[in-house]
Image 1 (tube, rainbow, N blue to C red):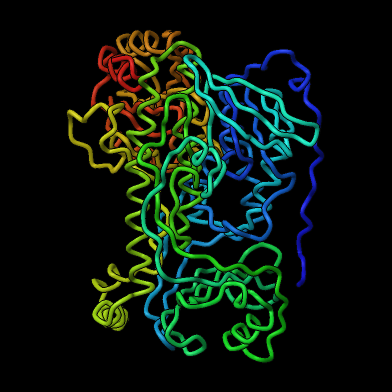
Image 2 (cartoon, helix red, strand yellow):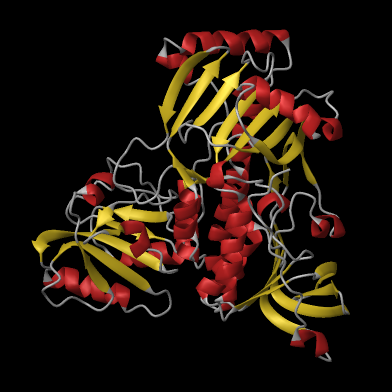
Length: 556
């Protein structure tokens, strides 16, 4: 098979921790150097937490694997220092098309709204993302990545976790305040701790073929139901970097995975789809089975399970890695506050309270996608085909077509950290929602301004250009709170006048902030460090904002 990418091999490095008489202690240890594990480590470093990542391998992923990264994931990766390289290398797309047999049923645009920094999705092979993350880790002073280091034992004690690590030079022990488990769907630590992951395994298999070819296909997501080149099955086409195309073929439950992966069996399928005259080379093949599973709880004392170690979904919809990034985005700012003594331990329980329902939402969408793509009864098959026929002419039927409901960011509607609305807003930016983006200042973006790993406020001034004495006094009191630092962005405040420390003027050149947040004069939004909105008001009230800050940090 052709290779467009050469996997790096990272050197095993002896650590001084291995020579210590007693186990060396680290605030946070992450097990697993896949994308989610490295995101956890990078986020820890961004928060100022000293952390170590352990991985039993010494290279990045083999094959493209996770290739679809959603807008929210890119925004998180921006904060971790990897987003721009992803966008520069990846294939940007917003448009998807659905086909039934020989006809296009309809198309959809995942980001019809303009004036966002990041697109709806990019496609990029997982190995590139992992390389970018390793590069970022190597630049960090607070973070170590130790290759060829397999965790063989875990014991939780009263105030720490102790682990045993196997290396080419023998074993040694470490302790940590918190252990983040990111060792994948077949998590060895989950099994070691006797914890279960339960759910549904669907009786169908899909073949992945990464194909290198030059073609004039546009950078869109194409999904076929029962196409003439693969009768009775489904097929998905995505473009990746380096002229690599991801093609998925539905195989059926009775297919032999090892036989189906062989080039002599893959190539005829590809020629039937692409045409006998099309020149292409195979780069990688794999066969997967749909699974929708999760652990009952993601927090177990001082252990936190993230990504596939905590929950597993089918690939259609790109909900795996994208939801894993949201796990770490949710967890690390909370660990920082607890480690610094600024929040109680119960704040960490909100990781369960927010991410378990988010996983259930992903599992529900993934299960529905799987049931639609691979109907298992005559009735469901008839319903699916009738829906596809109607969708060509009737918009209502398009909402019923499910070729993989694509990853959307989780909304923590019922989070105990939220402060409920007490006024009406003509905006979807309700408590629990991740913030939208908008152009600000001179070529900047709102989400970049609130990517500072702290709480932020957005205030729409009552009078353009200046603050009243009352506004100045309230904003000053809020930003002088040293317990939970707060930065405030003031829309409409002139940069040419003196403003309180911690209050930064923001221009809204296209009125997008005003429009997307329904920013009437006097409106105030409070954002968590992970950019989720935790409260909003129509007036500037110091006591209400401080109460909401206490609730959002588990202190009330």
